[in-house]
Image (cartoon, rainbow over all chains, first blue to last red; front, side, top):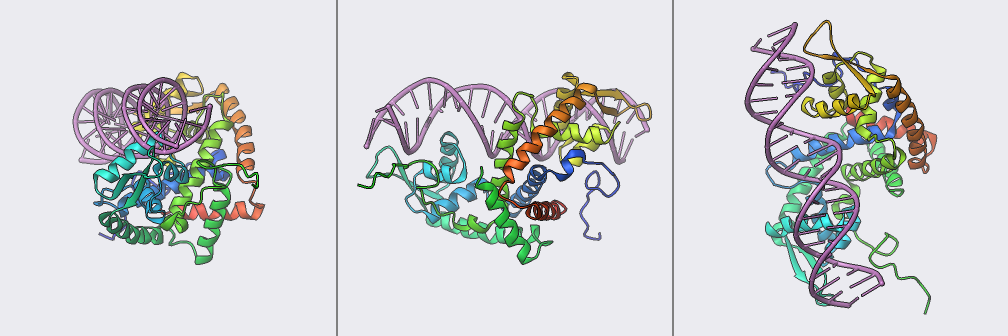
Amino acid sequence: MTGEQDRSGERDGAEPIALGMLENLVGYHLRRASGAFGADFARAVEGTGMRQVLVGILSIIAANPGVNQGAVGRALGIKRANMVALINELVDRDLVDRQVSPTDRRSFELNVTKAGQDMLDDCNRRVEQHEARMLAALSKTDRERLLDLLQKIEALG
Amino acid sequence: MTGEQDRSGERDGAEPIALGMLENLVGYHLRRASGAFGADFARAVEGTGMRQVLVGILSIIAANPGVNQGAVGRALGIKRANMVALINELVDRDLVDRQVSPTDRRSFELNVTKAGQDMLDDCNRRVEQHEARMLAALSKTDRERLLDLLQKIEALG
DNA sequence: TATTGTTATACTCTATAACTATA
DNA sequence: TATAGTTATAGAGTATAACAATA
């Protein structure tokens, strides 16, 4: 084995397909690039039971101790209704602690548990390698530029 | 009192949530930017019954007359099994013509119908406005750079 | 044997509406 | 009245396995 991945039935090695109007669409290439990142992210955290969204939520809670789930959802663009199962998943796995807020009994205060912090640290290490892998073709300046451009787009979302 | 409006619970103007490790993750920002594009794309083609994937497929077929659906799927990163319903949708709406290939009776030759071309033209116009809207904060050079960077990433997918 | 298209299935993400309990 | 969280539900996108017809 040469170590090359089996890409039969994939990639442009021997199937010249024109993209048409997609060629220059930023939206299309964003979608594909995001998909490629997502797939490699899944590989990176394989075995942890984590997914992009869960790592995102855990990261937000860790950075904002006591935050409630509505605020987490707003930060990540996740609807309240969809947050419920996600937070349940993290609480059931003892990665997040959920306590009724003493100041507003409608809401919960969320905090990352010890196990949750360990999980986040592990994922962080894996994700760093994943990002390095996916951005191998980009210089440091390119990566900074890319981040900057993406954030400008997000601002319009 | 200052007369400031209470914006608690909404909009990022008054809810300082730290992103933690997400802050500098290209994958995270790709996901958000792609999501923002997807949502605005949906708005742009509202009333046409089209979606990102369908426009993508139509575009590929238009640019590659007689292509079979497996090749379309490979070009777009869509699994064969998932192509079936999508192509059916386009054929049922008379946007795509599907004929058994005379050279390989396992496969179909796909072509865009007149109605399909009209639809594609309409979507093209709408999508151009949508892209202009989403990329308003970027200079022409920025847009070219962004496309270039995204394509470098896709190549690793 | 390999490939094209197909069916069946399942999981995730996303979206909306209606409900509760608090404020 | 408004907000935090919940439930139920539905539409999409994506993934795999197994099958028939054809190459």
